[in-house]
Structure formats: C-alpha cells, structure tokens
Image 1 (cartoon, rainbow, N blue to C red):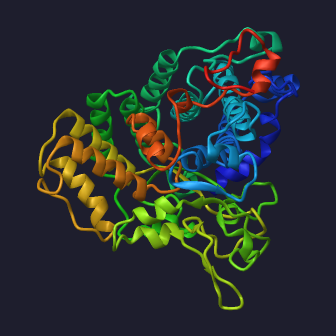
Image 2 (image 1 turned 90 degrees about the vertical axis):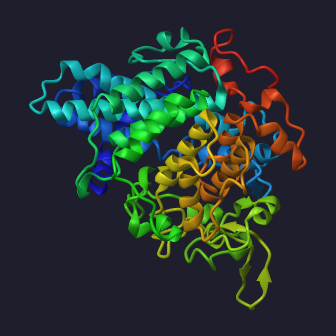
Length: 483
C-alpha cells in the first residue's frame, strides 16, 4: 500500500475542515471541491485520502486503543497525564481530548466519503470495475467509522450526503443506534456481499479494503447486535474464502517488514520517514518513560498504556504471546531491572524519528474471525468437540497452550468464558477488550471485580462538549455524563 500512502499526501488538503468545529460536516474548500472531483483519477485520489483519516488521533492513531485498552482491565494510563488518566480512572469529562477527537476525526472521514460518493455520479469512468471498487472501499470505510462511533457514543448523527453549508450541519441531531446499524449493514453488504470489493490486490495495492474485510466486519457487527446466526454465516464466508490463515509464529504478525500478511484482513497503514506525518507513534507511546531513548533509540518513550497488574497475571503458564505482547520492565544502562511494564507488541527496530514509526495497526485479523465464529457457533448451540472448539484450539495451539475438550469446557457458559479469555490474550492491546466486554454484557462484572464501580451509563462515553455548545438543544449529552 505504499503507493496509496504516497498519493494520499497529495489529497491531504482536501481533508481539512473550514474551521467550524461542528462534526467536521462543514464543506471542504468549495474551490477545491468544485475543481477536483472531475475524473476517475480524482475519485481514486480522494478515496486514498480517506484512508489517511484512519491514522488520525481520533481514530486508530490514539482513540481506539485508548478506549479499547486503557478504559478496560487490560491497561492503565501509565503516566498520570490527561486525557489517558481520566479514561483509565473512568472520570471522563465531556471535554476529554480523546472523546472530542474521536467524534471529530471520524466525522471528518465521513464527510470526505460523503463528498466523493456525492460527486461520483457526475464523473465519467472508463473503468467501471474501478468505479465499483472505489465505491466499495468508501462504503467499507464509512461503515467502519460509524461502527466505532456508535459503539463509543451510542446515538450519533447519521449523515449520508455531502454537507455543503454550516446550516445543514446545525440541523443534524443524533439518530438512534438502530438506524446507524442499519446503515452500517447496508454499506458493508454493498461493499462486500454484493461484490464491489475484490478478494485480493496485487502487491502495490495491498492494505486496501477487500471483500474479506467487509464480510469480516459485517460478521462482527452482527455479533455485536446479538444476531448470532447472521454473524456465523458471514464469518463462515470469510473462512471459506481460503485466503487467510494463522501465521505459524505469533511474533511475525507484528513485524513491520511483514505488513499485510496472510493473517491480516484489514490493518491501518502507516509509513515512517516520509516527512508528511504518515508514521505511527505506537513504539514511542508505549515504551517506558523512564527508559528515555534506551529502548526506542531516538526520542524517548512516553510510557502510556501500561499493561495492568491484572493483565500481566492473567496469562496461562507457557503462553508464548505474553513475552511478545508485553514486558514487565526493562534493564537500564547500569544493569538494573526497572519494573515499569510496557506494551512490546509494536516495536520498530529502526525508527526514522521520534513518533515516526513503520508499525501498522491491526483492525481485523484471521484469529479474530476464528474466535468470533467460535463464539457465534457456541451461542447457537453448544457442541462439545465441535467446530467452535476447533477454532478456539487452533488459536491456543499457536500460543503454545494445550487444546480444550468437552471435559475442560463442559457447558455453553464455560465456553463463553474461555472465548472471552482467549480474545483478551490473543488480541491484547489491539483495541478490542472494552468493546468485547460491552458486547457480551460482561463489562460491569469484570471491571468491578478489579476495583471499579462502573454503572450502566458508562458503557458509552460522553458526547464532546464542543458539539453540544455549538448546537445546543439539537446535540444532547448522554445520560449520566456531565461537563
């Protein structure tokens, strides 16, 4: 996907708001819009630019792993710096920077998508296959952004057309969760099930959304909605593509020279060293603060997102994933062990500069699909030694752990807990844990068992105060949350 990243630099100006801090639904520079969306190449460049929004702090650059991990029992903030500390302690004001960025940057991407989809019918395409593919990519990305928004905030504005004036934005209130999910399913169905997206790309285009990406996300959406039959069907379709496989070595999943590998279904692309802010910051963000440049080599570690004591203690003996995913400390230059835990999953051995790394961020992996399919099958009918066990054991055996049988997991409830535990360790620090616990209605018992006192309203996050202030009475706050 290196070509995609380079081209996206050219369109970065098209992804800048006009300055109104309202959903980022205000139009981009009208001159740019009118002069740009004229050819099929323009549309392709615009789609490439939308991928870049996934790198933003409000999306996979920061918000997803902060909410998915620091808000959960997997991680703590680390250094006592807001906004991480507030999220880790669940005292989240509506002015929290992560909460604000997540809303703003997802809608920034959605506005860019709506603009290009609105302009596509007026563009003459010589390659209709390319046209369908670009529409499929745009709809997949819109579905992904809305899926994250609705899981974080609940009701959100469902905007499907290009917003051409601030007045249009001010008319847009929050729409019910059910309507947002209906649109997510519609977009993913058109992108994946109806064949707009290809199964694979050649090497120069890897990293784009594929049909497998759309089907896998559609399966996750149905699982989130509790529709286990549909979830099982779409996840089965991903498996039956016979494209994806578990890599033999868990460590290989996160090697920066092995991006977009056979287990990757969709990952956010980053590229260090471009001078255009295209690199990721994960290696520096998660490395120990007190180690300075000892681990990262250039710049210094920030020490955020530290693995919790509960997480460290939760690994089974012999789990090969533990030493790849986290370290319990580091040895300083004096040869002393410093017990400062850190996430070691995202190492760049030769960073170009501080916070300018080559690490991609995984969104959906084949292991995730296998575990989701196992979960859906178990919810439909518990079957000792059945296919659900096969999927679970494939993931466990790669981790160096003994397989489970019907005696180990003698009931549907036992299997549920085993899947929850396996997902925690297989997908550690990839932004899934909080959403998994909410989805399975396990958030309150799990979080409160490790010392929190969460309440039902805290399953979703506060709407940013900036959105309420700029559009009072139309954009409202989630019950229980305050300034």
